[in-house]
Image 1 (tube, rainbow, N blue to C red):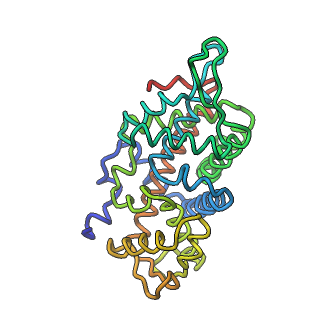
Image 2 (cartoon, rainbow, N blue to C red; image 1 turned 135 degrees about the horizontal axis):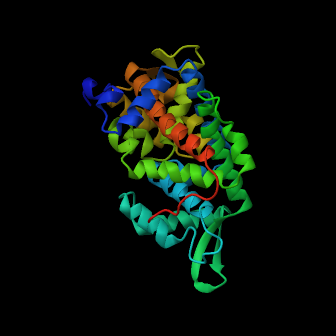
Image 3 (cartoon, one colour; image 1 turned 180 degrees about the vertical axis):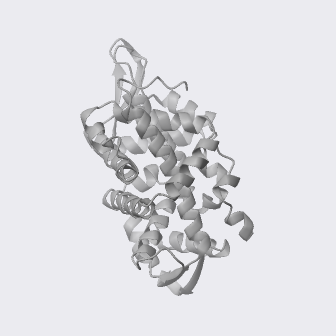
Length: 309
């Protein structure tokens, strides 16, 4: 991939103007680097503690389907027996945005059920309607994942205490994720706009490996090119993937000009300016969406509007 394409500024990305402007403002904020580090630590910790998450939400399509499920569940009108998260609605969501096919959606839902994160419930007034509801364990995982996004963006705002709002208002999560999906539907599709990140966003443990490399880099006390040690076997154990999977990811990143491998097995990986630029750009854009969604959700009350898919 040409250097000029890899290092495109935010202004050159095909995203809504407000997303680009908010991301640039956050990059200039004095807390930006602290927020980057905190986000990397919290997300990595969640995935290392809960092995099933890698197969459930570590890749863009599956992550968005999980978010849609939470938004549908938390925005459900309890007086409407047909409301809530159903397989048909999740498949329609995935089809609308060309994320994946219906069989893969069904397999993901089955995996969440098997892991103990979802229960299937029949509507009392219409036994044909079967919706999915998070279990107690599923809600705990959802809260931990949400906290991993809210705590970093809290560093940019004194207007709301996002985590406290979430814990005081059970419908906050529904509003938060519904807003995020609305932004996505309106054109804030970060992975499509930034194809340089496909290596990390569209495969198991990709984003999590990106976070681990960032932690290793910032452990050196700077955000400049440096050689870090992230052994492939250690990364593989952290995220329950194969060592070969990690090796292929790093080698592909090397071909794309993100890394230089100085020693086999991940013992010495040179982090190049293009990786630093990509990570900072992607995370600034993510923060822009999270912050706008959190502010909207914290400023309102009640259920989110029902998603139209």
